[in-house]
Amino acid sequence: MSAFAVLGKEDSTQNTNKDWIQRLWKDFNEHSAEISQLALRDEQGNLAGFWGAMTNFDRTFQPWGNHLTEGYYLAGVQVPIETEAPEGWTKWIIPAFDYLYVPVESDPSEVLRAGLDEIKKQGLTLAGAIQEFYCPQKNGEMFLFFPVCLMSNQRS
Image 1 (tube, rainbow, N blue to C red):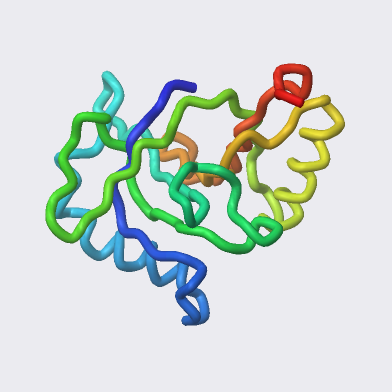
Image 2: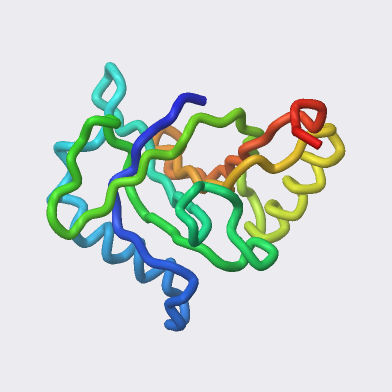
């Protein structure tokens, strides 16, 4: 998948408020009309998608630290890469990766564990931060996107 941009509201696991990610999505949804005209759309005018984008504290889009429990999160909508972030909004450009993706039809933490197990089973390694995708064309169905690379392509 090529690099892509997400425009949204950012916070991190350093926020000690309970349910901080849900509150971040609430903030995004309450203010999304401010940026709706910037959202990337397909030929039929459908939104390209919503992302719960993640990166490590170094902002290098490596997996969250401390066993995938610490990092930054951006609740947002996909936008063209050249989009300028308006005041009060944050834009990330997610680098290009090959992804293994799976629908989240049960507890997301179980899907996460199963996805990580499948990566190992297929002889792949996690190459970056895991991303959440919410597909507008499938009634907001959630998918986890696991950036992967072949173990044989890694340096020793």
